[in-house]
Amino acid sequence: MSGRAYLVGAGPGDPGLITVRGRELLESAEVVMHDRLGTAELLPLAAADAEIVDVGKAPGDVAMTQEEINAYLCDFVHAGRKVVRLKGGDPFVFGRGGEEAIALAAAGLDFEIVPGITSAIAAPAYAGIPVTHRAVATSVTIVTGHEDPAKPETQTDWAALARVPGTLVLLMAVRRWETIAAALVAAGRDPSEPAAAVRWGTTSAQQTVSADLSGLGAAMKAAGMGAPSVIVIGGVAGDEVRREWFSGPLLGRRVVVTRARAQAGELSQRLRALGAEVIELPTIRIRPVESAEIDAACADIGRYRMLVLTSVNGVDCLFDRLRESGRDARALDLDCEVIAIGPATAERLAARGVRADLVPERYVAEGILEALADRDLAELPVLVARAAEARPDLVDGLRERGAAVDEVLLYATEVEDPPRGRVEAALDADVITFTASSTVRNFAGLLTPLEIDRLAARVVSIGPITSATAREAGLTVAAEASPHTIPALVEAVLTDAVED
Image (cartoon, rainbow, N blue to C red):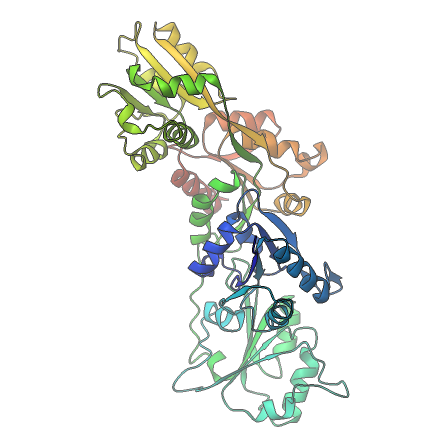
């Protein structure tokens, strides 16, 4: 079996900036080796069974040396694995992608380079700074500030850089900025030249300060800015050119999404579009259930006159099982009434080629019973397809009305075990969202009683059942979605943020 490595640029931090090719590879990778910066929000795209390996480096904290990274990468490919080496920014812009490519080539292993958007361009752009501008700068020079200008020998000629016209962009320069700035000024760079620093560029935590070259260090200190920051020197950073645009009503707010990793995408994307920093903390995972009851229901699905689906997961699991048994939506009786508990479930049915005949006004089990209150259900063959741990109210209510109900438990929600660092990040968040009672219970199970007591985040719930579970867990619910949908949940987060 032949393995292959893919050196993939993750982009500068905004998960929406990964390339289409990069995303495709990440979704199909067997192993993901990821950096510290610019990759965290992309990891949920990886397959649930992918092996995730943290090889990130931080000042004074190195998970692996570069030599160890090279060795691990080669070992995985030798073993026949499809490996995505997910690197912040672009692999070949101060990302050591060249070293990793050399190591793979020397070992005779297959690899592919997938370029990414470098923070050297993207961070200034999100701060409204074009690194080139026809009237101001016709060139841009990108340099690492990781080298100390004061050391006896250096690859960087700071005196030459001081004389280069156009824009100067420095990466990894915060710790040595004062020395670098002094070296540039001493070599003739104008101390009054506009300059700016952009920290955590392209993310909701983005912070920008502006000053002249001689005063930027003091401005960064006053703002408490540290790494990772991109520093821009040149007329493009001046008020005449720069136009701030990156904003949003949730900018600067950290919002926790507790949905299963495979389902978090829509909610996370909507929140990010409003400027939020999203912390994906999946507390559940979906496991399809195998049972003789499901097989029997699929084999004889044409006899039911009513089909009730209470979640998007239920739709997927049922129709996947039908397909596996050689059937599809055409196996339903033409007179079968299909009921979806809410619009999201109805939309997923439509994607499967089935139109929902009924969506109740209230997107809960009681809403379905209310919608059927005037109907004669006596002896009506009904199939209810749902989660293993769902409340019994719907099935009990239909049976009390005389319906002949078959209940199939299509999937179970299991406890996810997220990294402790993610849990600690959630404790310091501004908002925590819950989309089901299972997400509440499992989130609470990750915390100690003391942590629950000190939780300061605003809790926003998708509906009354989830809210009740949150209160039982000792959480205070700040807002609740109405109607009980993902778009309404986002609106509840936004409204609560404005009122808070």
